[in-house]
Every structure is written in structure tokens, then in C-alpha cells.
Length: 488
Image 1 (cartoon, helix red, strand yellow):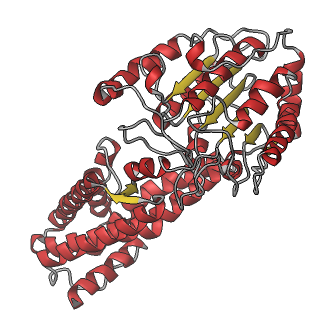
Image 2 (spheres, one colour):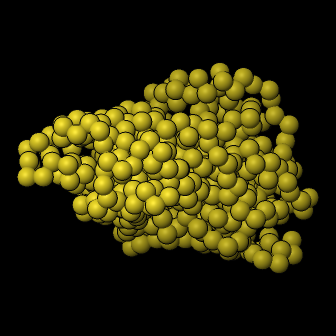
């Protein structure tokens, strides 16, 4: 135990680029196994902290950890080999693996969190610099370890550290990895299926709000996943070229939960509304989770959303055109958008996921982001900036209303899309009208806690939207109709 404590202490020292104090000949294979257990505990803590409840262990995550430990062992052997001291391989490998765990916990984790926060605040250059520092830190650790064994031999130290880095770090640029803990999507789906009968979402601690599930159409889940690349590429290829000489509106509409038709209805209607009334014909891309549309629409997944946004960024004038993203689904009290189509194990979408997906190349400047879900106000801080308008259907601590198997469109979808945007082309004015209408309906229904829709805007985005909307051609209102009774 004393040897293992010494190894872990030396691993932490090397993590901070300091010279180990222990005797590298003392630890053996057992110390390496002990370091592996230490690494396992660190990964359980960090991945468990990052995953939202309910959590589950991931078998592939254990394979990732064992592969990393093996590569660290090979890297340590290279350093020891170049130092000419083969008898201390296990000791150096144990310290190196402890340094791996310490670096993951004390360096990579905080640097990555800081980089994400900088991205969300619009400081892309600083975020990229922190990301590169995080990735390079392991090379600095290996230099510290090699210098311990190769004192006063700087060229050999740098060679040993670089070779060890190439063995232990670079393979992860191509090898797929997985955390030890992820959110349990099966448990989330089960929680989401529990609801009440009065139209208000049933509140599940840490879970999603959902009233009831509807009978779906049986499908081949494996074939559906295989078809996604084709379906998404077909949808992207169907986009029309941008119209030069004016601001173009591009729309991505996202229906997250496949258990209720209300979300598909809303997305299909949004597609028609923006195409015909807001001059976005040929610039609308719809992502849906619904058994009735799996042969026609790409799935509403985080991966498809990222790819769709990247493809649109390449086709639009990123500094002139406007992107509108409309997301509708259930939402959780810990601010995640529910993404589900049973039995597929789909990832949920947190505010940071959406913010990251919007960091495209080229960067899209002008954006209107609408999140229609319970607790959706929790998305505002991650998405707002001077050139973005963020609209949400509820406060960060309130549910929204109108979903469920008996509903054709949510309260906010009806108020904002079907009513307000058929009276005005101003998104800010439409929000104000929708907020008042939703409040009236919730008072009528005797809802104790009203949803209180939110908006975050700026003079810059409102000036841009005002100039664009004034140039729109006159267009008649587009009546709402459920997707089942219309052609997609």
C-alpha cells in the first residue's frame, strides 16, 4: 500500500511537471494494477459528474480505459528502453498511468470545461488555445518523466517523450472511445412515458416531461440507423442554391420525441410556414423522430443536427443570411431536450450540445433559435450573443403545456407559429403576442404555475431581422393542419 501511495503521489507530481521522488525500481506489476484501479476511480468520478441522471455504466468505456492503460505501458517501455534501464519498466509504467489519471482529473477536465465556457461566450480563439494546451499537456508530462530518467540529455529526452506521445496519445485521434458513465437513455425513455391526463407534463426528478406515448409503426432499427447517411444527404442535396443579392432565411426544424405526433405536426407546419410565408422555399431542412416519417425524413438526433448545421453553413452566406432553428420536444428539469425514438438509444441534447453544434465553419453570424420544451429557459445562457435571438417556451424552472397524444400542436407552437407569425413577420412581436396568448390559455386552464416564455435579444439581431422582414414579399397566412392530413 505504501508503494502504491508513493506511485500515485509521483503520478500527481509528474502531472504538474515535477520530478518524481520515489525509486522506480521498487514498484512491480502490482503497482501498475493499483494505478489502473486509481485511473478507473478517476474516470468514474469525472464521467459520472458529466452525465445527467439516471446514469449507467458503459461496457465500451472499460475497453477504452484498458486500451489507454496498454498504450501507456508501451509508452513507458519506450522511455525506459531509451534510458537503458529495462528493469524499471513496471515502476515507470505505474507512475505514468497514475499521471494519466491525475492529468485527466486535474488538467484536462478543468481546461475542457473552461474551453467550453469560452466557446459559449463567443471567445472561440481562446477556447481553441485552451483545447490545444489540454491536448499538449500530456506531452509535457512525458517530457518531465523522460527527463527524470535521462538527466542532462535533452535531445534524447525530447525524442523519448515524442515517441511516447505518438504511441499513447496520437492513436486516440482515430480510435473511438467512450466514457465509463453515460445517461441511461432506456431509463429516460421509461421515465418519459409516465404522465398525467390533464395535458400538463408529469414532473419526474431529473427526467423528462411527457404525458403519454402513442402507438408507433414497427421498423427495423438497425436498417434505420444505416439509412441515416442517405436520408440526410438527400435532404441536404434537395436544398436550393441561395438567392444572390438579398438576405436568405435558412431553417432547421427538429422534432425530438417520436412517441407523440404533436412534435411532428409542429415541425411539418413550421416547414410549410417558413417556406411559404417567410420566403424560405428550398431552404428548409426537417429532422423528425416519428415512426410515420422514418422513410422520408432524417432522424432528429444530435449527430444529424450537427451535420445539417454544418452543411447549411457551407451553402449560405454565413455573414449575411439568417439561420432559424426550431426545436420542439419534451424538456427536463436539468435542461435537456428529450430525443427519443424507441428502441433507438439516442443522446439527449443539453444547452452546451446545441451551442457546440452551432460552432460551424464558416461561422454563422445571424441566428434565431427557438426551443419549445419544458424548462427551455435553461438554454438561453448557453446560446445568447449579440447576433442571436433566443426564444423559449418556458422559464428555466417551469413546464410548458399542450403536448400529449390528444394534442395536435403545443400551446407555444400554436401561439407563436400558427397565430402570431401569421399576423406579423417580426419574431420579436410574434413572441410578445404568443406570450400573452399562452398566459391567457394557462389562466383559462387554471394552471397554478404558468410557463412564462422567455426571449433574449439584442439591438444588432433585431436591426438585422427588421431589415430582412421589411424586404419580404407579401404572403398569405398559412393555416395549421396536422401532418397526417397534409403532404410532407
